[in-house]
Amino acid sequence: MTLHTRHPRRPRRTAVAAIAVGAAAAAASAGTLLAASAGTSDSAFAQNGSGLNGTVEAIALQSDGRIVVGGSFTAYNDTSRPRVARLTTTGALDTSFVPTAGGGLDGAVNALLVQPDGDILAGGSFVRFGNTLSRALVRLNADGTLDAGFDVASGFTLNGGATATVEALAAIDASRVLAGGNFDAYKGSAQFHLIGLTASAVKYTGVGFGANFIAGGAVRAIAPDPTGGFALGGDFTSVDGATSWRGIARLTANASPHKAFSPTTGFDGSVRAVAVQSDGKIIAGGTFTAYNGVARTRLARINPDGSLDASFSVGGGFNGAVEAIAVQPDGKVVVGGTFTTYDGVSRPRIARLNPDGSLDTSFAPGTGFSAGVTSVGLQANGGVLVGGSFQQYAGATASRLARLLGSATADAAPGGATGGAAGAAGGAAPTATVGRSGVARVKSGTVQVRLPGTATFVRLDNGVLSSLPVGSQVDTRTGSVAIRIREGGTAGPTREVVVSKGVFTFQQNFRKGKPTLTDIRLSQPLACGASKSEAAGTKKPLPRTRSRAVRVSVGKTTARRKRGVVRTRSRYITGTARGTVWGASDTCRYSRVKVFRGVVAVRSLITRRTVNVRAKRVYIVRTR
Image (spheres, rainbow, N blue to C red):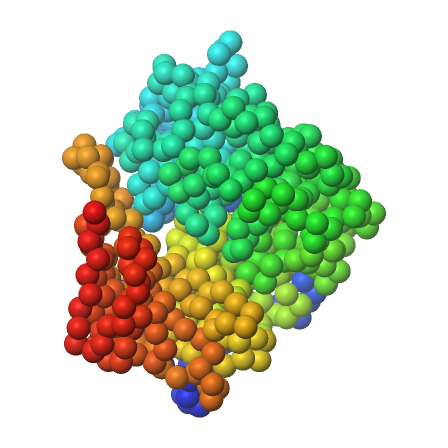
């Protein structure tokens, strides 16, 4: 990975023109939209027919912006698409994805996960794909055919003959997956409601939980968090024997119980949806009316330690179940479900809240949806994809799927979704906010981002400015990205950081009275201790690696005083500096820093010793 930081210069006319032309081209290809309020139906997203003939239960976005939907439907615009379909960015059926062999899936799809290579995992209540037994979970190739290498076979079962279901999916890494639902066995062996699986659908033993980890009910939702861990929601009454974790759980990166998470009584009802903010706070929705004994009607925000976040006030809350939650980069929260009011104000099945829990009155759904909302997805231009059982939105036809405008400006259909990264095309350019987000721009090639609270990497649009929340994981192995960061307050100085040739996580913390700290954390998983059989089963394109690296060049800020510092963080070492150039690399056995210019404060994470390393010197820390 190569990373350069440079001090901002006066914008060149040619660069501004290039961005403006890109936005204009996008608008022309999508059709010009009249200015409308946020929450208005996006006329550029047209089903042009009867649409879907059954409920949409899940939505997933691919890196190229195409939309995968799953549910109980069997056709789209009268064309056979049994329970799963892929659409273009404008809502047309993608005819290159044909999941119909042998009749396709024979039961509903409740969960979707798009993997980095374009393969699609689908979980639900089905038993077969065509003539192939694949109970409750299946992996499809990018063209919709069955991936025979993911052999679930008899798969998930439930004692007593009831139908086992997979209702939630999340990526452990590029090849392994975490699956939650209502089941008590996998391939004949006891496993209650949560399991990790390898690339070949073999039970993954590297997770930090056993067969009886979840007790008392199903796992209904899984969301990744910025630390690489997970938040779980569901009907369960205990986790690893802790009855206080009722309906909610927080796990580490290896899916062990997070020791810092300690609720007192948990929820008094089912949790149907969870989302994790960039600061690690968990937003949970469902049918509950209280958390830790405090009234919270169907929506609550939980601190990373498991306590209730009292600063997120829902007032009277929702008068019906919450089924879907999506957090925007600006901290606003889109909520869908079966409700018709929020805190006494009419919001039929869709609402957007401000970061403090108050109703966002700029998002105006009018008469809203005619029936329940079960899934919500966010797109690059701020557009909101909504799926459910409805057939109308604001009095107009919308057959189980709709796209709403996310802002009061004219929006153009995205050329590629970024899973919530707010693009500048069709609206005001995003700005960097210290401690919350930077502004990303693709300089060359292909750059993909996995935003906090999302499970998959999505592509950033070339020539478009996109908000990049802290906690985002960025893949620049085949391209380069420039990130504008702000330091020292709302009007503080800025820098531009150019990154290429690697995978990293972007972090930034505003520390009162101290310099703002920007973290570039090497985050491609290392293959430390992987068995030969495990390595052989990994066929995905983002595998564990034997080495990883980053190069950093830090320039001056736009202020006279040096307010910020940039730090690289690897496996055994950190490197911190202002105004210098250095490289950091990792293997399973050691971490290495090489300084090219200036001085870097290098700290060993093993000995806790800090030394100043000067230009043309190398410092290595080895594991004991």
